[in-house]
Length: 457
Image (cartoon, rainbow, N blue to C red):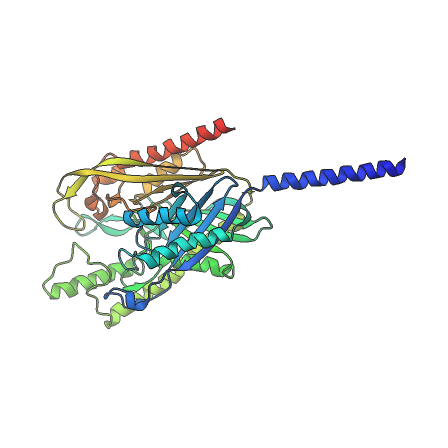
């Protein structure tokens, strides 16, 4: 009799153990893969004004599956993802991976140190490959979110103390969100797979080198990846940086003054407009060489400081989920446009005539309680700050320069239209539309998703 009870008890234990395993398996629905692909162009394909390659550039990708659908975050070391490039890449990635276009966010780091308008079959193939390779490496995983701060960005618009007109410079009192938003992905036994971090700062430190560089985003990601012996992929996500520069940018201002004088000696006035890159600079001038060397040091320093903050946040993330649900949406909002009729970089009110309406593409991916909102343009920082304040998701970040580049140029917030900064006077948007259109457009998608998820439950 005792032996029968013993056997029966053992059977119950086996059934219970199998039940626990089954429950554990069902609770872990998330899988994640990540990789990076080198997209550095060959030396012989660089435009004439480029003198070489300072550091390699990449397409980095994370693919996420919640058990029902897949999404992909892609970050490319490129100035911008044009609408034409996005219109080719998104369907191509969908065809090669099965990930729907709506579920893909391709973000440019906005480095100013790559050939303008980079495109072509070789580049597009490598970007698509980065998503394919990431999908092929998917493992059961969990996701976590945390926030830190970094003070390497600053509002870049000031009243010049001499001219009393708007110009570029570090505005310590201007709006500037210092948040570093960090999303981590790791295996179920705690080994990091990837990190997706969001920060609002223009990647312009190496802009006058006329050499290929990933700038601060590239140096930051490389620093993080090196910390994990390159077993982790670190993706920079461009925050609302339309009015944000690196805080230490004086070398660029000094180089501009040198260039203005050199052009003036040839009878050309560029004091209120800047040719791209470092055109007109004498690289053999000891002062030019010293300033550029200081910029190279700044790249490494800023990459290290921002990278360390990301690592600090990663270490402090305790709450992680292995079974979040994914929701996606996207929409287009339209604002009245204008065409500028005069020239000049900043300091004076522009003159305009009416132009056709401007479409702005918005996207939303929600993974559990983390909301990734995207805009296809250079958004001013206060628009992102307002969105995060009004968002129903405590964990919200804004991805800019994503899935295209709006014809608007810069996208200022409403109050900025009262200033004559170079971003505002060059914007193709009329005042009074874009801020509300973007924030309310994204909020509408968020609440639609919230309502849908509530009904589903």
